[in-house]
Amino acid sequence: MNVYQILKIPVISEKGLAQARQGKYLFRVAVGATKKEIAKAVEAVYKGVKVAGVNVLRTPAEVVRWRTPKKRPVKARRSGEKKALVTLAEGKIEIFEEK
Image 1: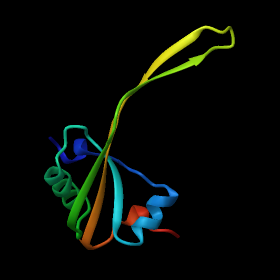
Image 2: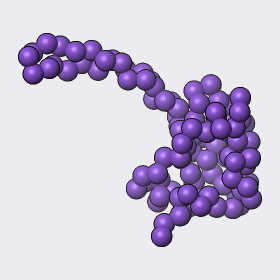
Image 3: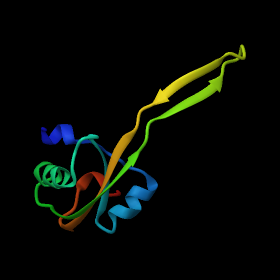
């Protein structure tokens, strides 16, 4: 798998910025990616960083139901996703830096 297929997008949120100060960064990753592949992809994309550890969490796909204005029930399926919390031993990722 290509490194740009493994790392989809960085998750930039209030909690993510607080963790970035501690050297932990959150990314959405491909569902089939392993921890070793994620660590290699982060080191390849962001030069000058060294990955200390990777934690992974998966959110399952779910079926969502709601009613339309005409009272007809609608079903939809939200796809699941996989996120990786990457802890760096050295270096910083500039995307997460506050101005």
